[in-house]
Amino acid sequence: HHRPHGTPRMRSLVLLVLAGVPLVAPFALPCSPLIIRRGAQATDSLPSVRLAGLAPGRNVRQVQGAASALSMAAAKKSALGKALIKVTGSLTVSTDFTTGDRALSKNLRKRCGISAIFTALDMLPMLGEEQKEAVGDFPGPCPIVLRETPEALADGSALDAAKSAGATGVVIPLPALGSAGAAELAAKVVDLGMEAVWEVQSVEQHAEAATAGAEAFLVTDVEGAFGVAPAFWAGLPKGAVVMAEILAEQEGNSELALGKSLHAAGCKSIVLKGALQGRLRDMKYVEAASNGLRSKGSSTFDMQGITGKASAVGAGHGMSSATMQPIIRKEAYNLRDTT
Image (tube, rainbow, N blue to C red; front, side, top):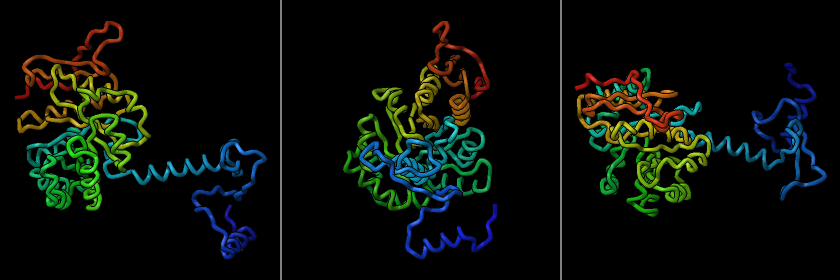
C-alpha cells in the first residue's frame, strides 16, 4: 500500500541515513524491514547470519555468492554474449567470411540466421558498412570478429583498422602466440574497446586462457584431439561465451551430426569454417547448414549437386537408436538444383 511521505517508517529510514548507517541498494531489499540476527551455531567459518524472509539454512556467504554470480553474469553479458548465447539454450550458428559482397553479407543475416561473422582484414570495411546499414532493420546487424594470422595481428595498425571498421572482437590465437603473447594481444584488444576471443585447442589451454582473464573462447580442432568433450561443455558456467568451430562440407555432411552432438553435450554456439569460398552456391550451403544445425529433433541435409552425390546425415549422432543405421530423410535443405 502507498504510504504518505513522513510516516514513521520513512522517518526512521531518513534517521538511519543521517546517522551514517550503510544501506543495501533498495532493489535488493524486500518490502518488509531487514532483520539480521546471529544464530546460535555456525555452519562454516562465517557466522551463521540469517536474513528474515530467506529460506532456512541460507547464510550470508550463500546470499553474497548468489548476488556476485548475478552481477558477474550481467558484467559478462557482452555484445558477443548477447548475440551468441541464448537464454533458451538454443544453438546459434556463425560463419567465417573469406570472400563475398554486400548482398551475401545481408543474406547471411536475413536468410541464413547467422549470428556473427568471422573475417580477415580485407573484408572488414565492406562488412562493417553493411552491418551499419542494418541498424533498425530486422534482423539487425550481427557482430563482426577479426580473425587474422599472428603476423598480421602483430602489426598494431591491424587492430586500429578493425576498430575503425566496427569489429566487435578479435580472435586471439593462443596456440600460435603462447600465453605471454596472447595475453599481451588481448590487453591491446580490450584497451581499444573490442572483445578478445581466445582460440583454444585443449581443455588445458581453456584453463590457461581463463586464468589470464579470458571471457570469450573459440574451441578449434573438435574434429581432432579436442573432440566433442561432453565433460568440458557440461562443466562450463551457465552463460559462458564459448564457441566450437566445425569444418564445413564434411564427407557425408557429417558437420550436422557433429554440431548436434556438440549441442547435446552443452555447446551453445557453432562457427562454420570454410563455408564461404566465393562460389555461387555458398550462400545456399550456409542457409541449409544453419537451418539443419538449429532445427530441433532429427533433420537431414541433402546436398546432391554440391558434393556430387546424394548425402544425408541424421541428427544427434547420425544413427537410429533402434537400428544403429544412419537416418536418411529428406527435408527442406535440398540443394539439388544448386549450380
